[in-house]
Length: 104
Image 1 (cartoon, rainbow, N blue to C red):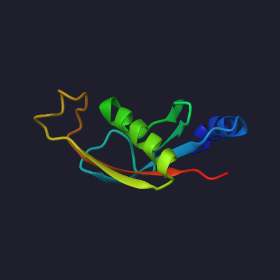
Image 2 (image 1 turned 45 degrees about the horizontal axis):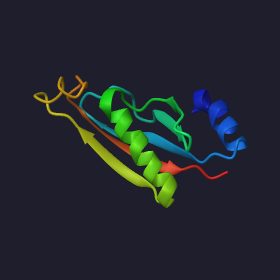
Image 3 (image 1 turned 30 degrees about the horizontal axis):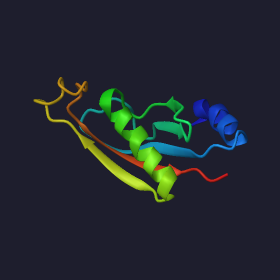
Image 4 (image 1 turned 60 degrees about the horizontal axis):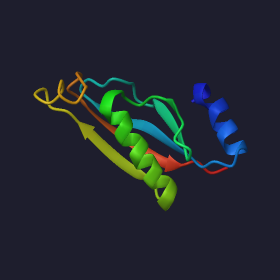
């Protein structure tokens, strides 16, 4: 979390909303370890990482929804071995990502 704090502080100082995504479960092989975080600003800026490939794009979209609704969300991502290469992920595992609005 420390590596993303400076950006979060700047975004909040500029009056932007911030959503935090955290890897809360990893099943099998995952691209990022448990506890990995990514922050998304209401202007679409991103810092940190929860996965890679298409998963992060999906997390950004979910983060925008969380900022609009104010309601947190738990998202599951699973990739079968057959699908792994077509969507840009090769690990074949599953992850759960919790996305929440960061309050000042």
